[in-house]
Structure formats: structure tokens, C-alpha cells
Picture 1 (cartoon, rainbow, N blue to C red):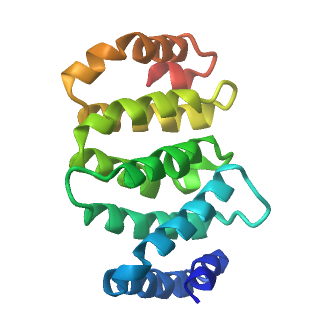
Picture 2 (picture 1 turned 180 degrees about the vertical axis):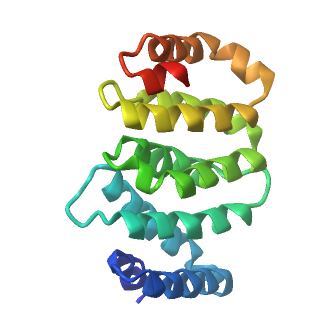
Amino acid sequence: ILSKLVELFVVDDFRERDYLKAILHRLYSRLLDSRTFIRCHIQLTLENAAYDTPEFHHAGVASLLQVMCAIVNGYAIPIRQDHVAFLSSALIPLHRVRHLGLILKPLQACMITYLEKEASLAETVLLGMFKYWPRIDSAKEALMLDELREILMYTNQSVVKRIAPQIFSHIGECMCSESSVVAEK
């Protein structure tokens, strides 16, 4: 039943998705033994979305990300390794989707919630973003520049110093972009 509940997030009606979000979050908070199963199924759904499988539904992914943001907010500190693996295998690869703008706000909120819990994950997040950095889609590149700015606000100076060459390399490429929107950002 729980797996079917996660699969229902592909519906077009936002009211149904809102009810599903509330139900899934309530079940997650009450069914302690099923939390791992719920997270694994959400992870599988987000991984499928990251690789643009046919059942990918932008609004459903955005709703699942909102649920995940609430779940991540409840994580104990330090964050367990399986939660870090979720970040690396399910959330960061979502930056590669073609229609990033439709899911960016809840995705960014999820990433920032992780960083608020454990700032040491900033390097993982930034290097993951650079891995999926767009090369020809200037609209997506502008969105990711905005996200980069937000993520850097939650990043320690020591992490920034460690990966400064990669950061400045991407910023330099953006400054030389043929797109005026990207170059100005």
C-alpha cells in the first residue's frame, strides 16, 4: 500500500497531491518500522525522475520533494550515512532533468535543509551540482547559478577554499557565456 501511495503522486490534480503529501507525511511520522521502506520508494521514484523515465511527472516530483524536505528536517544530527547516500543518489542527480525550473524550488529547499543539518555536506552538494552543470541550456544554467548562490550562503569558508578552483571555473565559464542572462548573473 505504501509503494502504491508514492506512485499516486503522478496525478494532475494538485489537490489530490496535497492530500497525498499530508497522508504520506503522517504515515511516515507514525509508522516507525516503515520509514526506511518509504524513503527507499521515494528514492527510487526520484532516481527514475532524474533519468527522465516515461512515468516522470514534474508536479509529482515537486510534491515528493516537499515531503522529503519535511523528513530531512526531522533527521538526527549527525546525519546517518544512508541519508547522505539519498542526497547523493536521488537529490543531486535531479539537477540533470530537462525541466529543472519546475522542481527547483523544492529541490533547493531540500538541499538547504540538508546543509542546515550538516554543513559538511556542502562539498558533496556543490561538486554534485557541477557534475550536472548544463553546457548548452542557458535558462537552466541561470537557474543553477541562482541555486549556487544560495548554496554558497550555507557553505563554510574552509569548504569554499577547498573547491574554489571548481567554483571559479564554472563562474568564469558563465561570465563568458553567449547568453546575456547567464553572463550578467
